[in-house]
Length: 53
Length: 263
Image 1 (tube, rainbow over the protein chains, first blue to last red):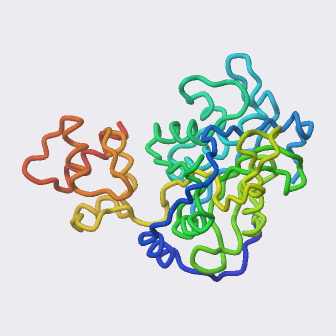
Image 2 (tube, rainbow over the protein chains, first blue to last red):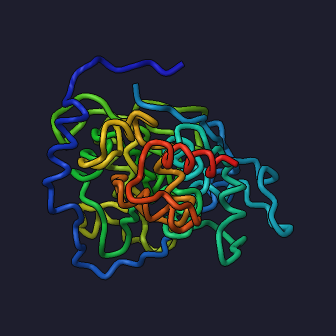
Image 3 (cartoon, each protein chain N blue to C red):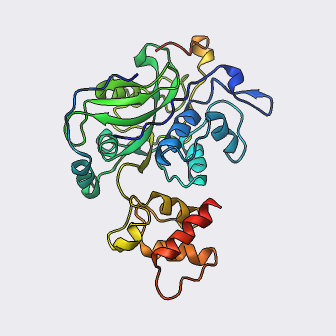
């Protein structure tokens, strides 16, 4: 069961209106970053402690 | 309420074996995308993380995977993902706006700020809550390396994303310590509102009020409709599959397209 947060904040429509007009959607990084970033292997780092939250 | 996918957990190693390779601990981005595809199709396409991994082309059963590889798989299922990687990282403001607009996000990062060690990782962010436009206060995160969905503070979510080591964990550089404000992510379609284009007649909208079934059918026919389904998209889809709709597309043609897509 997910404990829900208190209601509040902008509506979906309000955010969508801003998103539609938002032109700076991306941030062009100054550093030449790679695109092919792979996720890591958990077991090699934490012994496969997959239940830890 | 925002559609919530079935949570998918990472591991054990034997949870995903492809070509003799044990990938169960190397599939976090695949799991994140599997949950994203579930949300984006509102449960019509439910794949396991291992199935997503198996659909990556060319075949890749070594180590982890990239956002781009997984975005290609999502596209095979009619789910267009806007990949933000490399120099085209996404501002966290865009991530906030997208979540507030009903779009889910596959977010890359590193688990060091979570106290789990230096591991590049990926989580599914399904929705957000609170705050102001573009600046929510909380995010509902489906972390495959946890026991289930949990609300993270927006700052914790950002810390996770900016801790990414773009050149791998062995390289000390992170987005944060390089001063880069943007993050690596894949932004999924809006699942929460209608996707009909502005000029679509009411009698056609009535066939499928939110337009998503028609959108999936149009996509299946090989017509990319972008973010909104217009009558021109439907007409193009019908032409692609050889259906003669006469002079104008009418509701019966749209129903025919739906029936074709599920047959």
